[in-house]
Length: 489
Image 1 (cartoon, helix red, strand yellow):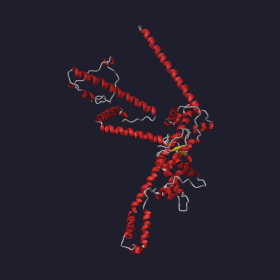
Image 2 (tube, rainbow, N blue to C red):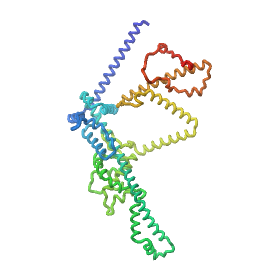
Image 3 (cartoon, one colour):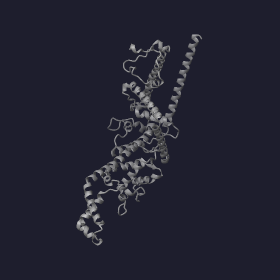
Image 4 (cartoon, rainbow, N blue to C red):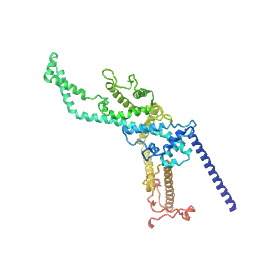
């Protein structure tokens, strides 16, 4: 075939490839422009002004509102929870809603991720339509993530609140254990006399008062009543000491978060609604269990509002743990409370039980089958060998990713995988060549030894210094480099 003809074909293919790239770039540009126009549709001039104000420094600060909103809570405390809830109100106050037209969630998430990671100046330099669309996507996704952040803090704060109350009660009981022992011994002596058959029933009280004393017996009884704890104690005395902590975040929590629940937790939602609105009628008491009954319902049948609040928070903590609650949602189809599932509780529990059954069967098979244990160990060793090679290849950053955005991390991991695969291919080719050479020279290569060879060995590869990508001419022809002789090293 003439050389000129070949050059013409190659040039034609290159032109076609360039044309396809231009067509793809043009189509991608039009698609992105259409996406931006869809997102800004319905955004009023006032809302545009509010979005642009996010890029400006806050009053009395060098930090922009966008930077402030991007920063989530970093502490577990009542003030931190209030700030997290106020962050949700700030986002909602912008009044941004997505248009009714269908926009792929992945595209919205990509725009929001861009606004969450780049500098504020980079967002400000974008063309107006793209800038507004990017901020719309950011605000839309931020409302969900801010809500999740606040509920995470709530979950941890409630756990810390009740755990500290239990620990404080344990300390108090340790300090009063001597008083309890003394009172118990007094009552035990009275009971011994009560059970003594030698004492006549008519003179029993006189003997008890003579041996112990009426006042001492009454004091011992009162001490025991005050010091003993029921098995389901809720540590109310210690919780009341933390009333100020709850008062700092509870009103804001009930105002910002509107909970929804499955049928089992509907009474809890009604109780939270009563705490928020404080109507004239008494609160629903179906959430008040036996442990809370004597704290919440007083002797005159009046409701102790403080005890009722702690009872509701105790039930809220349990409902979150049992996956019975969700938030009524923003624009993201009912953002769920941390640790919950949008699916029904029964379905979630069924899936979890199926997973436990499968794990149990797998564990029993491993214990019973020695061959399977050997195979599993072999696979683990191969995996560890691959990780060891990757760590040495990625020595420059000590195996840590420093790119803040996902695409950059994916690029680094792709490059790492490419280099590791190159080393594995190199080792495989040369190990096969070595085995072939040994067999040709009459050495016995046992299959079980061959099976233990790993392509992840890299002691012979220099990871430091300068890298040269010049390929010897023999290698370009598909040949291998000469093998090293042990006695020539």
